[in-house]
Image 1 (tube, rainbow, N blue to C red):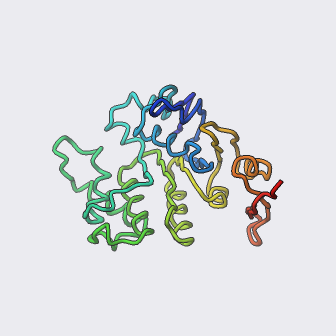
Image 2: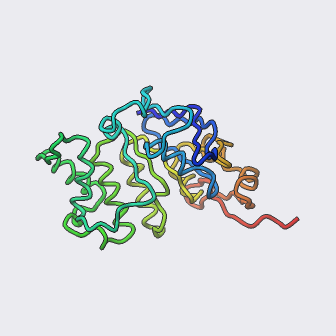
Image 3: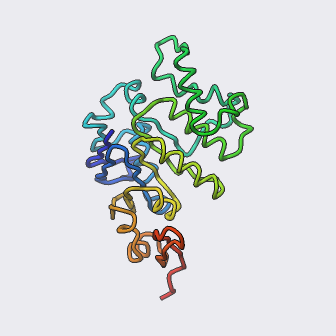
Length: 257
């Protein structure tokens, strides 16, 4: 499913946080959104998963205005994994994942045999079937992320929105989570903090600064030394990976004038 963001602007408390954003994620693409803290990444994503309503512009899924869809229909097409999760609630893993089936259930919200099959398959897909009876708050950070991805997969969306999905994860967990997402066959729009992870996993990157898109394109073309100095305030060295040859970034502070 294609995602098109057209002329999107967001105002909160009279302040314009995001201005005239245009972004496209083709069907099945993994598109990354990168930028410094406070640049507008999370604000933009909140509009995409309908936690915020834009002051102007549209988010379209295969041409349909997302904000014109019912909540149920929108949830059948798009799932989100925000930065904050309800980890303080003492649900089991199985109960957390089952929440992903709510958009497919009637008013009585009664789970069917099919719902159980979908949830079991989602847990299996992320390698967390053995956690089904565990209390969610007792899990490690990496386990929680896998379970939340399973919940999103159980929702059976066409589009997955992720806001900093690798926060608080160790290196192995970061690689595992992004590989899981990459292999899910969905259109993915993700805000990512680590530029090397973004360069490795994304088909395209959009760089946001001051609430505006300042660069976009394939990672290797976008993550130039000049742009990284201007937007992130660092000196970047582009080096080839010793095995794959893919570009990796090393960082230093910019010289003091």
